[in-house]
Image 1 (cartoon, one colour):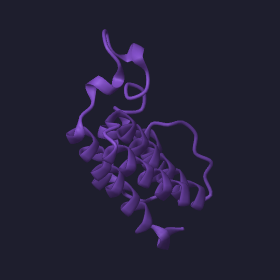
Image 2 (tube, rainbow, N blue to C red; image 1 turned 135 degrees about the vertical axis):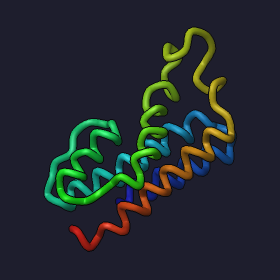
Image 3 (cartoon, rainbow, N blue to C red; image 1 turned 180 degrees about the vertical axis):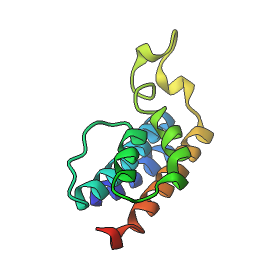
Image 4 (cartoon, one colour; image 1 turned 90 degrees about the vertical axis):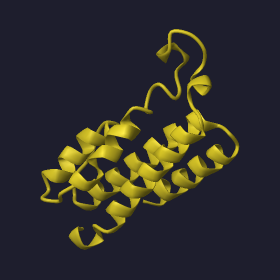
Length: 123
């Protein structure tokens, strides 16, 4: 969970430095680390990077993640295109990201991190 918090702060720093694509990617990573922390705490060994898939695993433990699924979908969209130039027909990833995208990604990452922190009673 510490890595989730640290990565979230790094995503904020990237946004403040106008590195919007990296802010979006790190927001996805922060949420992924948080969900994986929850799954590890529940005795599972999570695999993969898809937040939706990881939340399906959370749901299988009896925890209802429905309130954060829309955020997971938003963040999953930033896993590859925010980093790889061949994700777009022309240009570089940073050209496709702006402050609004970073704000949305940060908000979703915080929503997921906060959700995970409320689940401590289930671990």
